[in-house]
Length: 295
Ligand code: G1P
Image 1: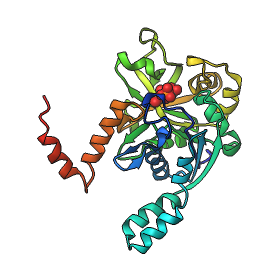
Image 2 (image 1 turned 90 degrees about the horizontal axis):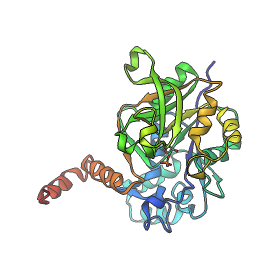
Image 3 (image 1 turned 135 degrees about the vertical axis):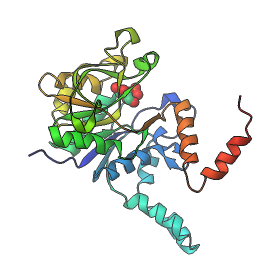
């Protein structure tokens, strides 16, 4: 029987250098897109995919993430006394949303290293990994789409997206062959090889790994066996490449729109599009945008 995926790991100990100075004294995971921190989008996606346990890998200066998912007595009392029941229930929902555990990554030594920090909390179960920089808007949550493939094959599954050649060197890139699967026509791949942040001329394809993974627990020993790779960091892509020697790994070109919210332009795009889609803000915001004389 294929074991169920109950846990999701959120690496959140990175330094957020792409978003300085905003991230000098606050975690990038707490930057709000409209009114919700980046990490909450990922947590909600995992929750709506049926995941029950969230493991956040934090580091120094990240305590506001823990506070965000904790009970806020003073705020709740104040909202209660002012009879602001809508806002109160929204604030309570965040802490009641899900069961969260934290583990520290003392040094930001790479994504593979961050995932390895969750080994004790994950144990010997399959688990999801969610990078909260990547916000994915879709009808079926992206993690759910990966879980559907996982529950059929019982193997690790990565989210894939086609990216322009000139941007490919910012990603893990796969060499993969299409799997004929009627339910997911032209979207499901079996991965043959992968490489982290190749030069565009060396990239094996234009299929990039996006920040959603479902992994089987053998990944931990693979991370333990690899040397630092691209950027001198312990890369998850290198561990997956090692795992490929013994296990199949699938890739799914997911359905949905991905925003790279860890990048300033991607963050602005997410902010504008999410605001336009909000029932309370969309109309006045659209009217405002129309007044801008954009060439
Ligand atoms: C990480 C992964 C990379 C992946 C990317 C997706 O890179 O190492 O393989 O393509 O996330 O967002 P980072 O963006 O942390 O440098």
